Image (tube, rainbow, N blue to C red):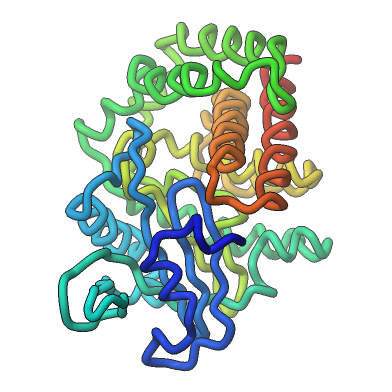
Length: 337
């Protein structure tokens, strides 16, 4: 990666000497909203100064606030992983972690999970099995049963509120229609399907009445799960309540869609069977394809955003573009295409 495209503080933190602990060869991973530094036994995550409307990290104060929210919310499922807030200080023309001088940036310090036990690695190795799904269900069902519910949170489950999340995706991707990843027919098919379901206010009201709108995770898929000595589910949505206050079906559908995306339809069906049996939420199935379609489209959108970030190196850019195309194809399938 051309370091010239990186912020100066990230360039300095790529040096193992910037850390008070053994850091090995520091590795940088980027998303469309974060710089993630893998340094020895720890992970340091910094928010990019971006404003996408649905997410605003444009000021230092906002980035600090959302780092604190990330710690608070993720400690619900992973208190052992989410350690503390770190400060990047500027002194003598260099940037240092938790040093003296002006606070230039804030980040989150986490325990580094064993990469070979990441769910995505197990999927790629063909090693994911039903026992892993059982372990996930054992964690997820009580998490949602404990998750906060209130009249305020319930309002995020109405058809009108869900429509805000769903329909903005079409506005944000319209400029990409006709490109390599998203065809006009896919865009029109998914848009029409989503609008037809959103017109069924009764479906959404039934889920509210059943108590299924909760302060959930918001980003429940294999990239945010580690199956090590126990189940670790991390990196929930901290930056916007309307993505985290959602129907439990919306979270569960994300993981089921992710399994479908990786060609694991049998495990996806098994996951839904086990979750509904353990939770007693039979109404989840009626919303499943709608939320699977929504989640697949969001992943496609994020792939496009990342592929068009000039700081992302070319190999990652191409992979994101290709992945986006597969997600949009899957979304169209859920929409009946």
